[in-house]
Image (cartoon, rainbow, N blue to C red; front, top):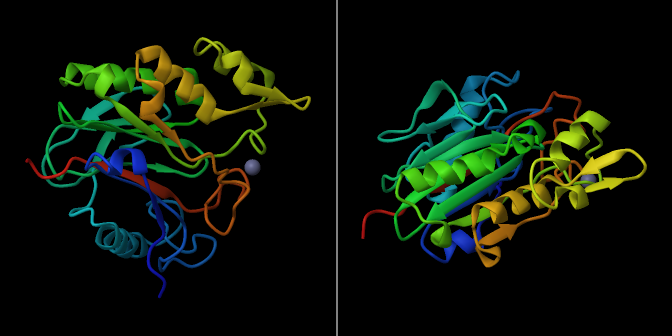
Length: 254
Ligand SMILES: [Zn+2]
């Protein structure tokens, strides 16, 4: 069987932070969840999801199963410590300052954002769909990292694969909310003539607003909807599809 597929963040990897975005191949789930589905309760069996998780943990060298929360497209956070858990808390931001404790968010089109301050040793995983982006979830995540001792000038952010403006058509109301979410965001909605927001560009602008440096932001800019062989897409697959996992962890204490 093929190895589980994932992309590794160069920006976080070069400072010793484990940060990966899973792709869909190299798992055991049958269609339409084929094959590395990492989301429970989507119609795939829990056993498949657990086997896929174990395979990803092994292949990516995560060391342990990541903490996850119940995602609700909001701006709440949960601070994770100890052994990996599927938290019952509703949170779209997971934060940890403990070594070798992976934390993760699940996506299928939404934007996963992994962040780290390697100096003050704080990491965050953020789930940013259009609702979260309109509410400035990544701005809240940076604020929470600062409360844990992080500093803006040290924070690095990796913005993973998500649905691109090529495929992401929204209604006017949604477009207006996103355009108002941060300075310059009007430029990040393309009209063809329906509005097509660029979630990556909007979150990059929000990060800039928090004081994160331009050269501390990495983007993948791969559209999940345009690449069925590599990515699940909620929109393309009409809601019946698997979930990717974006995982970040601090290294063992120096
Ligand atoms: Zn596309």
